[in-house]
Amino acid sequence: MTESKTAPISFCIRILGCLQNEFPYVRKHLEDLILNSQSTFPKGVFPSIRRVMQQQ
Image 1 (tube, rainbow, N blue to C red):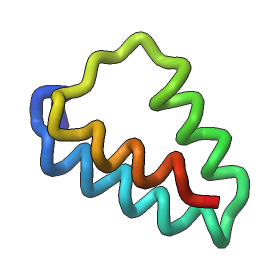
Image 2: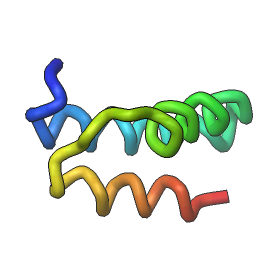
Image 3: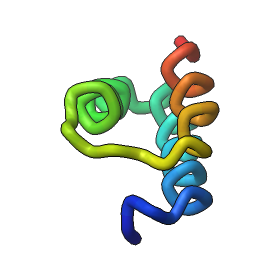
């Protein structure tokens, strides 16, 4: 999976977002991956990121 593929990245982020409710440590890893990384994501991924980061 490369950073240029929007659908797989978005789908993976949403799956991890669902798992963060059951496994709290997933939230920390998601934040590190999304917020603290130097990666650049395609524009189509940002709605999924916002949706997952707003969940609690």
